[in-house]
Image (cartoon, rainbow over all chains, first blue to last red; front, side):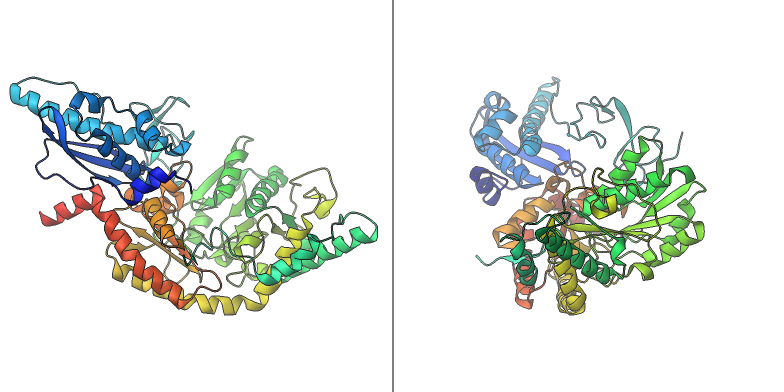
Length: 189
Length: 393
């Protein structure tokens, strides 16, 4: 089996799956292009996470990570929950295959995005502004397969700029003749 | 637990007759075919016998068969070897967008030494339009490579029609027939191809044993140098046991191909017809009629392939998926994207590919356990929730 027993347990019996209709905060990260997408819903009471629900579109690791994050964060204060990191999630799951580690980043990000959403809402109610730091999706360069940091229009590993292929929507090198994913001819500007 | 193996495209079980033919080469028959003594000559006889059987399966002459260690090697050999041998005539290749990575990457690697290539698109069923191949051929085109059947979506390509266009244009044609040979009738003369790749593990033979057909008179650059094996074109001591297995598998396939296909087609059709009936938002991928007899492939909306694959595995069912998560590179299948499927749908790819011995009860079992798995995973999916909300409003 490619996954640890712990991962398989959380994959087969995920905790806290679902939607909170009257959530205090909601966070969504990832997109189907990268293969994973997670939505976290939180209820906050006295600065603690009173309830958490999630939904995940993704592989076994993504589902297990979401489940583990929800379990780790339940009942924690918001500050404590913000300290949950990719590393601690992966560790709690007994490790993840190397090429699945990015899934653990996504889980903590989704939770943190939900917390920030809550903080923004409460701050807005008080007339303040809060800076957001997380909630960006992660994608991979179609040429070197390295993870794209920050903006998705540029790969730091191979130093190339991307544009979207109009045929398949995948990333293609700006100014290139054909899309690396579907092979469509790209018109030159 | 009962295992239902439906992953033909990854590997077929070894036919008992093949295992039996190979066994003596584990138990004592170790001679090197290049040795002049009796031990060597026996081994030589065994591989030449196998060569004849492989040739007979695809309607080739014995001297046109070169043994390789994998289908990927045969594809690398063909694309690089044929292109470089024809360098003085031009440096442009034409490939379909859904070729196996071993063809696409070979062409990519040739780009470093001055070659260029054009990818021909496919339609929504994964079919290559021969006219599009014709349009892509230029004055400096030297090689066209279009697969005979695609293992991810099962579509069988019109290679014979493409060969007429190539012949008229004076361009060589290679076909990656790894997914097709042994499953459908393949004849190199009828197809009109100059080179063809095949692999034993797709028709009940061993892994690590494959072959490349190169038509007599067609020049190809040696792939491994430094020995006289395979006419000097692929040096290295022969994998005698594997080659014998390939030969026996080819022999059995020639006799039983029709029977095997007939037994599987009905079961395949049941899956293709019933699965979308039992679960909504499931679409067939690939062409409905022009497809491999053992191949039923789908995209299931709102769910990712690996999670389905693992759930089916827990129920004893082995299948494949072309989703990003199941690939080590975490990229969605280039085949499904080239067919115009959007990313989310391509992530829900699932391939059921039958093997000899798959029963009606096996298919019924799949149809029974599949819906609850999908239901459970969809209830977990934010995309499905979004879909239901949008449907309501």
